[in-house]
Image 1 (tube, helix red, strand yellow):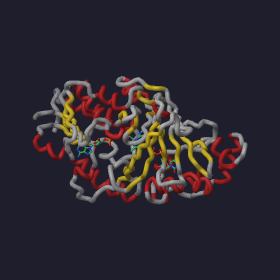
Image 2 (tube, helix red, strand yellow):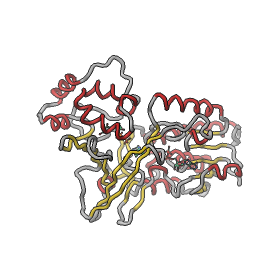
Image 3 (tube, helix red, strand yellow):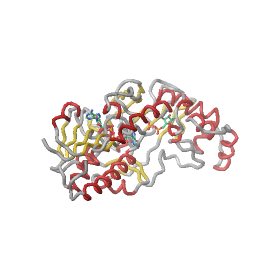
Length: 374
Ligand code: FAD
Ligand code: UDP
């Protein structure tokens, strides 16, 4: 079988590349996916009660990158959605991320914005060099809030102490000295009106794109003739684990349907200090679907299972760097995505990465009169 381009993985990285190659270069492309569906971790589906769930945990699209927003908007309309999260601390539900409301509720105060700023300055621990996620939190909010909101959640989520995780993890959560209780404040936010899977189906609706599901690429790759491989699977797997297995954090998603129309006050409620799960998502509150029943998803972090989160520690990054050196030497393989680049990418960053990789690919395509080099 001959395809100029073969893509491993039908997640957002792989599908963005497939769409661009098929629609702009008008070339044939084969996508090989080991799961039984496209979409990778953004896959969503209707459960037995007809409720749309995100099979791999809650996905909220948010970005400041207008190019990415416009690109995905070619394949979906968006429902207006401003994500909100509450976190359960000391018997109260308080808004996340930390805002003026959070501080007032946590300490039973009635401070205004500037008073909260002073309050947090007083709490903050002075740290000479911020090296870890624990340093990030302590330096912004001090010991008490760190212990109430970040310490145990992070230990549950990652299985290690925040002092062992690099700064990028807790830095994802802003501290707001205002009353904006939205989880993200990016310019564009929304949920695809008919779901992520539908969006992915529309991205791949081109006869130049062939998708082979339930196939590990290793089973077929030797029988394929191709010029460029776009690889979005795990880097260690590509190199037969020669530098050892990279660590990933996994999650067991447990879904429950309740015979009532509403389960909780917000789309997501975090449980930093209680239970073994980190958070509960109520899907109807993300999608705005109407149904007499409601489905929730609990997330139980695990060290074994599907690789969801690359591990942001010094040791893991050093181990990945060994694979990265080898990856740089590959002439006809493009590595992109959360697994291949071992990066904690959000959806918008993955699409941006794929669009940029495509632009590079296009240059080499056109500089050889339509033929690819190497
Ligand atoms: P993936 O989606 O992992 O796709 C890789 C694909 O490659 C998979 O389908 C896999 O099966 C396939 N594959 C791997 N190995 C092989 C092989 N050997 N042969 C064939 N196929 C193979 N981002 C946001 O912007 N907002 C959010 O709210 C958000 N929430 C998230 C919540 C959770 C719980 C998780 C885990 C992630 C979340 N993300 C969120 C991140 C988002 O899921 C990723 O940015 C995006 O899905 C990455 O796409 P990808 O194509 O790089 O990887
Ligand atoms: N976090 C926390 N308490 C919370 C929410 C998040 O300590 O209530 C930390 C935790 O370490 C988590 C990180 O902040 O892994 C990033 O949170 P985010 O909500 O972005 O996680 P994701 O949606 O990527 O799982």
